[in-house]
Length: 291
Image 1 (spheres, rainbow, N blue to C red):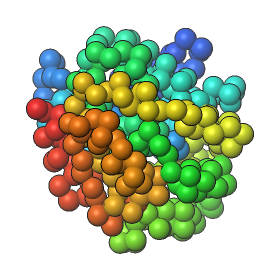
Image 2 (image 1 turned 180 degrees about the horizontal axis):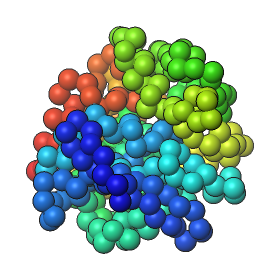
Image 3 (image 1 turned 90 degrees about the vertical axis):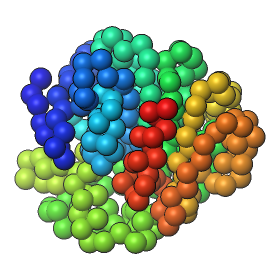
Image 4 (image 1 turned 120 degrees about the horizontal axis):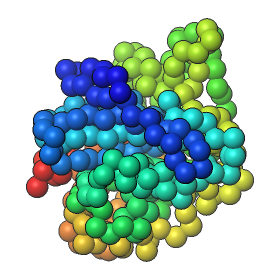
């Protein structure tokens, strides 16, 4: 397992084979000690482990941080059976990963689809999570945001150079990050793209969009309230982008009624989804999971 360094914190590469034969990848930030508590960070629909590069070094001060890449993303193998690009498949992959690492209890941070997966995993194993952080996701996914995602996922795959990739990144995400600088967009593009065969490519299998475009349930299970309600006994921190088009304030209010102990953090002037490097956010997440 080669070691890498990011922001002064090392992580190991973990490759593991799931029961259907695919080889998947995760970063393993070992944390301060061999017996450190664990936090599992799960990315959104088209993203990868680089999404958590701002947060992982903060959490690794107190926790071992596991950051997987779902099948069809990043270093994880692409699936020849595109019908397996479904939330329930990803949940099964994550349960298998934790079992293979001998992890029976952990905290989790789930961004967008990763938050939906956290709800599903909790329903399967209610004793698994000590703390749950939901990043800009709830039991109701606003139609405007879902339609926007459907439009851009799979709409492009490769670019001639990084400038084209940066322009694409800005065009697709500009409304969500109105205050982003040119350097922010370059860094954003580097998180979602990689270089292959002389091209800059989006770091996911464009085929993963096909099941969700054919059936909404492939992106978002139809009724998530029972899964959310199953977390009432678990500490939950909800992070929302102040201008999010995927998680509306009405859903937040309903979530607070269902889970009276829900903690809430709104990130101003950011849409879907907060990067978690905004002022005070990573510190708030660290403080929450360390209680």
